[in-house]
Length: 60
Image (cartoon, rainbow, N blue to C red; front, side):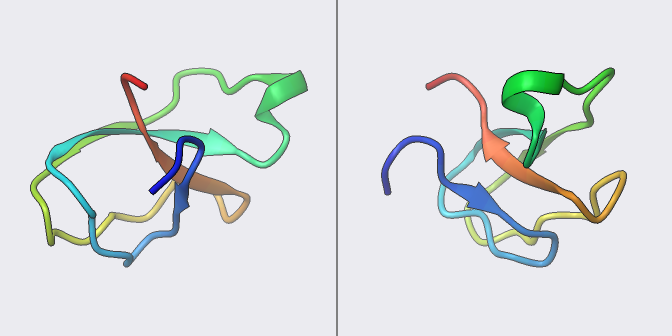
Protein backbone atom coordinates (compact mmCIF):
# COMPACT_ATOMS: atom_id res chain seq x y z
CA UNK A 1 0.00 0.00 0.00
CA UNK A 2 1.21 3.47 -0.80
CA UNK A 3 1.73 6.33 1.57
CA UNK A 4 -1.27 8.43 2.44
CA UNK A 5 -3.60 5.44 2.58
CA UNK A 6 -6.57 6.25 4.76
CA UNK A 7 -8.64 3.79 6.76
CA UNK A 8 -12.19 4.05 8.01
CA UNK A 9 -13.49 2.96 11.42
CA UNK A 10 -14.19 -0.78 11.26
CA UNK A 11 -11.51 -1.46 8.64
CA UNK A 12 -8.87 -4.03 9.54
CA UNK A 13 -5.35 -2.75 10.14
CA UNK A 14 -3.05 -3.92 7.33
CA UNK A 15 0.04 -3.91 9.56
CA UNK A 16 1.07 -3.55 13.18
CA UNK A 17 1.60 0.08 13.99
CA UNK A 18 0.40 3.34 15.41
CA UNK A 19 -2.32 5.12 13.52
CA UNK A 20 -3.46 8.71 13.93
CA UNK A 21 -6.66 10.53 13.05
CA UNK A 22 -6.47 12.60 9.91
CA UNK A 23 -9.16 14.77 8.40
CA UNK A 24 -10.15 15.30 4.82
CA UNK A 25 -9.24 18.96 5.20
CA UNK A 26 -6.24 18.51 7.51
CA UNK A 27 -3.73 19.65 4.87
CA UNK A 28 -4.88 23.24 5.36
CA UNK A 29 -6.73 23.15 8.69
CA UNK A 30 -4.83 20.72 10.86
CA UNK A 31 -6.41 18.65 13.62
CA UNK A 32 -6.16 19.68 17.24
CA UNK A 33 -5.34 16.79 19.56
CA UNK A 34 -5.93 13.96 17.11
CA UNK A 35 -6.58 10.51 18.55
CA UNK A 36 -3.83 7.93 18.23
CA UNK A 37 -4.29 4.19 18.42
CA UNK A 38 -1.83 1.29 18.32
CA UNK A 39 -3.16 -1.77 16.52
CA UNK A 40 -1.91 -5.17 15.53
CA UNK A 41 -2.45 -6.48 12.02
CA UNK A 42 -6.04 -7.59 11.60
CA UNK A 43 -7.48 -5.52 14.45
CA UNK A 44 -10.32 -3.20 13.54
CA UNK A 45 -10.00 0.56 13.66
CA UNK A 46 -12.10 2.25 16.36
CA UNK A 47 -14.46 5.14 15.72
CA UNK A 48 -12.92 8.53 15.00
CA UNK A 49 -13.88 11.74 16.79
CA UNK A 50 -16.16 12.77 13.94
CA UNK A 51 -17.44 11.40 10.64
CA UNK A 52 -15.05 13.44 8.50
CA UNK A 53 -11.96 11.83 9.97
CA UNK A 54 -10.09 8.72 8.89
CA UNK A 55 -7.10 6.83 10.28
CA UNK A 56 -3.65 6.98 8.75
CA UNK A 57 -0.46 5.23 9.72
CA UNK A 58 2.12 7.29 11.56
CA UNK A 59 5.82 7.30 10.83
CA UNK A 60 5.98 7.34 7.04
